[in-house]
Image (tube, rainbow, N blue to C red; front, side, top):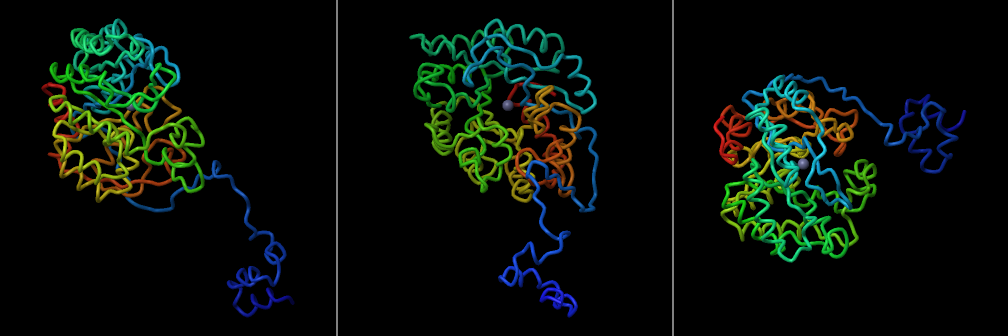
Length: 402
Ligand SMILES: [Zn+2]
């Protein structure tokens, strides 16, 4: 009988591992084969929760929904992350989208990336005009013209033209701040508060067109993709999403430049996407909402963040109930990104998060949580807050009657 067997027979087997660690025998010698650790790659790990708690199935939203943040179309041509074509490629037909919308009580989808110039006119005709009040389209800047000497004026005129063609607002992608460069695709990064865009921001204010702006990205994308990164798998799957190192500004520098734009254009209304792009720090978002009365936020692709801090999130919704808009970032056939794929399940998860106090459920329709390995908790908002978040706040910003 060796030492280990002796321990087991005396009822002290549990400490056997510790004895082995202490150098009495190597681990492999000491442990029977069954209890030896087996390697398992992180990518293959799909734990199923054993927790038995209530599961509420919220098939339809309590109030008609305006989804302020969707992508039904994209620029037909882009290079180094910069959209270079006025024309769009379309991700879904009105018919297939309307089927989901009707099932899920979605009154309207706002397609933020509707192109510009002739491309925008085509998008508006295909969706907004063909199905009134079911689709609204935003325009995007024509960065391809950036090097023209009169770009500031041209861009302001392009906004006026887009308004005449039916655009409801302007979308700024994270292109500004993280991709667009002095020579468009090369050179130094162009700053978010570059004065060349001032006439564009002002024109949006004059025409009552809200600016839906995406600045920066999750804070984990600005730290090394290593074993300490809570979004390691996501960044490992999409290395180009990392803004760590290189000549990228910090998250704080990006948000500061953005805030200077808000301060300089108080008559322009901004919908700051992805919970002000700092859902990991709602104190920061609150501070900015207090500071800038022209700022609102949407919740698109961030219920994973909001739902892992349900008490803080609920207070945030209570305090800023007039400033938060429902959005998802939904993209038809965007299967590669389950947190924003346009389908019934995605909307049911959002509704469950907002309307129930269910515990510990998936924030995306995926086998493994795609934005970090955790699950979320519902925040059970009151009817009056739900109605503002689902449509009231968006209707006010878009000048609609629901
Ligand atoms: Zn988006």
